[in-house]
Image 1 (cartoon, rainbow, N blue to C red):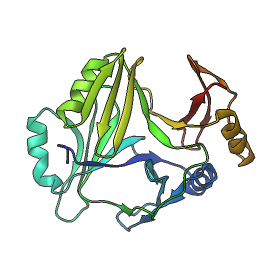
Image 2: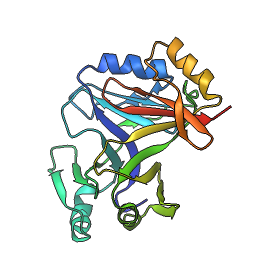
Image 3: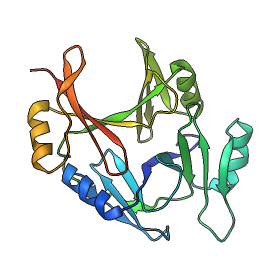
Image 4: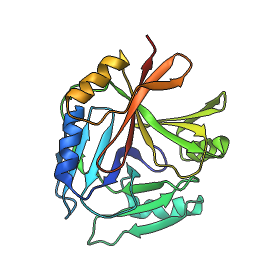
Length: 234
């Protein structure tokens, strides 16, 4: 376990959980079994690698959410280590949670316990396997140092950074601070996958070049998440 625990879900706020559920099931994710932790409506959709927690509730979204048992007792040492918490709920009569922002302004939430159970052998998603969350930062090395300090594997090559471990995979590239994460999926062949996405009734964007020997397309979820589906050129 890292200093902040194990990755649980990307938590996302929605105004209409039924619309969100329709989108993600069309995309090929399956629902997990959720508990009664939250008073608001809540659902989790997954392919076994990606876990999206959809909350019909207003909060700073999206948030990278982790499970850290013994959270209340752990918070002082995390604060002493330099984390600046923007909220903390740790009374005896409430579900303990806390949150801070990474150097690029993304919310990171910590929970005292899991809020869902993983489904058994979920099918692969329509667009291929989930690869990572893509983030931009004006300081790739600074972001890598931050995540490494929390106990994640962090490496840099050709100006790009990778953060991995404990259920989390992030690709960092130089760019503007604070852009929401992009969910990246691997497609093979990408043109055929795009046709399947369109047939499922989802608004796939046009195929375009994504770099040397790679092309792909994007679509946007009802919550405003960008999804990028990428594959090799024919």
